[in-house]
Image 1 (tube, rainbow, N blue to C red):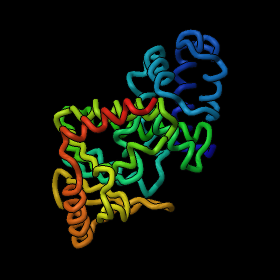
Image 2 (image 1 turned 135 degrees about the vertical axis):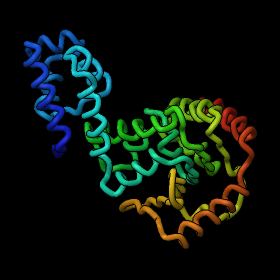
Image 3 (image 1 turned 120 degrees about the horizontal axis):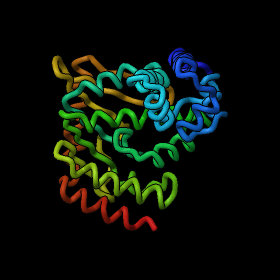
Length: 266
């Protein structure tokens, strides 16, 4: 795994705080209920810090949130360079309109679904893959903030049928969609099974409304993502969005459909 600057900073600060506390790697491991080999692995940048490990270390070493903040930076740093700017836009947006014809959008994925998707569709393995999963889940905090963006998601019906991770993972994922879909500022819509060709089938996209200024959009492909800023292009995507939304079921009917689909995964 290539060393990331923030990963090295975390390792150095963990070592500094541990030494300041007068603890060996073994003693710290005992205090936080993790192995000394894991502590050593993190301090040597061989293992990325997981959330639970970070929280326990921050508490025991009285770091006052320092290790947590560095880990947050690690997650952002682990994102693909072209995606980092979009994540900043996403986190600041007052509204997000997302169409996905293939998979559940990242903001709505469970950990198991995200891991299965990365195992089957990404070039990452081992700890690098785990960092990608952690970074994706960390993005979801935007939906739990005091004033979350209004999130409107349209899914093609095939998303509910694609066996990512197997029946158990799919059942958990679809139940999670229903749970999140009951939040006041989240609206889910499914394009029904049997719908013929429609404009959205050309690919997934997200339109973000920032606190100030014009909408921006994001397109993904096999090589990298693209942030769309040109007014004419954003306008075109808005038109596509309206066409897609017109094909989809109402929010209430969608939640019922997803609930039924979840229980069909046995």
